[in-house]
Length: 153
Image 1 (cartoon, rainbow, N blue to C red):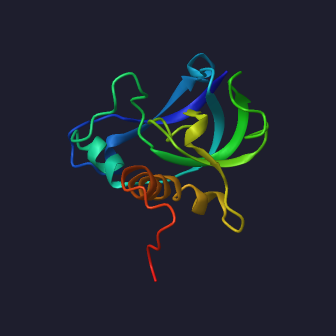
Image 2: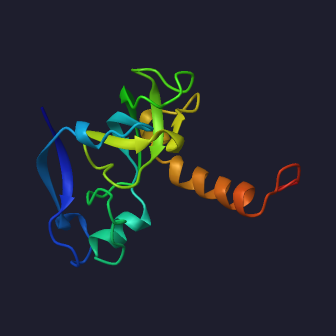
């Protein structure tokens, strides 16, 4: 089985959409690790790192997908054997912060980087949530440890 994906055809160009090209790739079944979720992508967010990657100024992390796309929304189509059964089920609507590869029909994401789509948000809106949410959460609760504090009054 194959799916369509967008890859960067011309790294280092002006970073516009002309640097992108549609391609066909095998479904990423072999990338699904024990704690991963395979998501059928409905929408992908576009962020500054995506533009910088197209310009050649933001290389993908070693060992991760070279495809652009750091946040997505979609539906769970497979779960690694170590994903807790109470977290997700096949067909669940999720949004996720990827390690790359979001500009594709299917994307493998670590389970801990996935969230249920918040109530009231469309798939397109939900695809814009993960980068901002995870960045704020990490900075406030994991770096500063602001638990029990008031942030905005």
